Length: 338
Image (tube, rainbow, N blue to C red; front, side, top):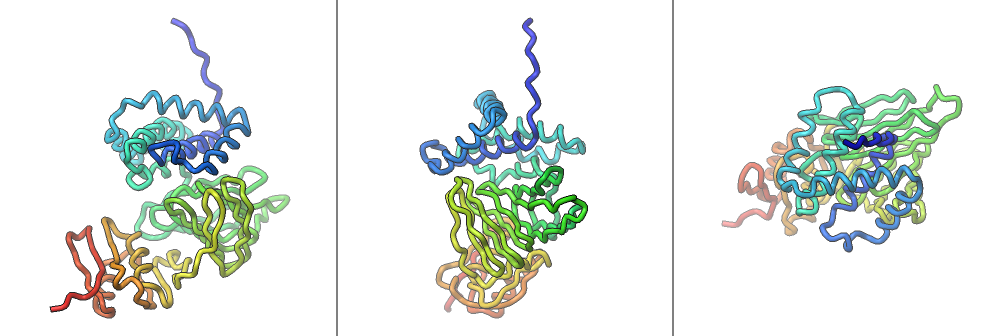
């Protein structure tokens, strides 16, 4: 029997990047519908280093090998993976994730959203928050990171740069002085839509389906879209959207972007529709707001771990009705008239 030479080991960050590209390019059933800017950015990455092409070929080969697996089975494997990953060996889990994540392409191409239904991002993360309240991490460089519920990050403080990868959810970062380093290193945050450099700052990064929202409280943050288009600086007090193809100003909503760190949703002169969308992030099931009442304005503080209490408060203080089809399907609308 012929003996095969073992494949050379690739750096974890390159394997991670190949997996991320696999997921991003697999979000649409038809490859022709992938944005040209995304394809160009992928090609720049793939051709930028021979190891990138090697990692991509391995991911692609795994996708081919698993192509006959039923989509629901693929989804079940993805969902059960975190529970089966009891061993603390991060390297072994990361390599296992490569095989498991190849299954996500099967599920995605069959029309099942792994982003919504399978928290694959946690398989790649160094830290994740699965509790019912925000968690704070303190890093060796003096930085502090608050992870919102259902959030996951990877951390690399070993090189000439400090680097955080936001894989899922939302974080607030207060950058430290990096006093233990001979020269203060730059601080970067990577997202699926581009990267950003913190310029001595406190800021919030929140992932959504097709973009990330960056809100700066102190200092400034420089955004670099994934397609290589022009960078943009977000100053203190401002917010901006970062997508694959550029950045856009994010209009103020009256919501305090840092309030989640205290376990609340807070704001002044908020649209009811925006508040309900925030509450929906912290509930199981579907919570919707009818357009007939979405533009009502209100101010207040609402605890993210008691959304039911928040809904009852709205019913008592606002001209709205709360309709329960089931406990997991709730609609906020105009009051019923007799």
